[in-house]
Image 1 (cartoon, rainbow, N blue to C red):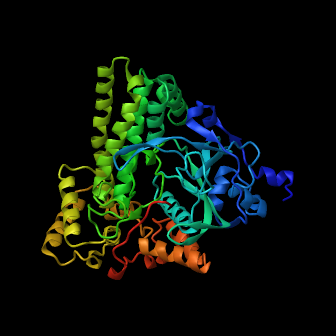
Image 2 (image 1 turned 60 degrees about the vertical axis):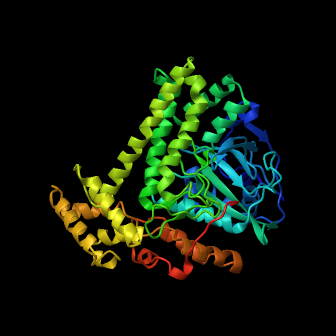
Image 3 (image 1 turned 30 degrees about the vertical axis):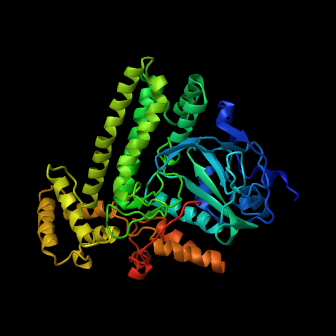
Length: 491
């Protein structure tokens, strides 16, 4: 392929700060070339934010770059090493099928990792082929962009290219590569790997790098490493509350899937809850409900405790004092999460001030919803537009009593009903990426080569608080025949 100078640039403005960490942190890679890269879907809005040239990246050369066949000027491909507790069991891991090509510096001076997922084997592949199938890569694109639309911190998806090659799983599938964009790919598992495989000096280097990249303000603290721990806890408390408020279930909250930046990362066996049930699990491998919807806050705290353990040598030279500092920080998570969740639930019900009995009112509603198997998203959507009769709760004695209490509570506010409705509209999405809609889009794309279904779905999910007519058409819950829904790892 002949490449001119403009094509080779394409707006890339790479730095490679992660490569300055100790060598145990990564393995440098060469390109893993594929036979026939073809661009399938491209995120124009994200590309503009990154300062990239849309025309060049949507060309033949752009597809080759997004497949890993061409390494852009200034890039330094590598696979990151990390460890993790997977379903509670510790193991060494790493990017087994992903390649970080560099850190894009945007025109605004922001820094984002550009990673190719499904780009082939790495030293961390553990006998895997390092490849990815088209369906799971499109699924991550849809869900991650939906999360962005919901206002939830997340990695994002720039593009998906097909490779022209097959991936062998239970069946033969078309291969694909996703371009993932993240504030960074630093994980709790990254710190676990350094704590186990490196020296205290290595660990301090990683912590200093993390502070510089994500939390520069903590350098002014008396104990910057304790401040780092506290800031990560704050971001995770906010993030997990946002998950709970929209009914998102991550499905595989291993420590290697908790980002230090506070972004949602790894859209493997994830899904959104239809009927409200705190025990909801979608992952086919989570047979005991470890990562069920209702357990996510507790698992987040557990993961953060593992993070705190790695920082003990940096928190204080006396181990006993270090443990006390760590325990004190971790103890704050539950209350921080609770504050975020309670504030979010008040907003979902249009409550603009604070009353002591608000949580009792909220919990009572969720209890009724669980009893009558009410759709989580559509129940709050019906409340938003003053149509409680559209819920399965309507007409039950429990709901009638609760509804009267809610109306009395709204009446005690100084704000108007219009103010409450505006708050509810901005807090209750019109729709979520319903599992059956995602599967319909993927089936049309993978089996029929029809990407229009997916494009329409992505469009209506891009601004879920718009409450448009088209969004209303996509808000229906699935038929009972579409239960039970399962998701799978390996995406």
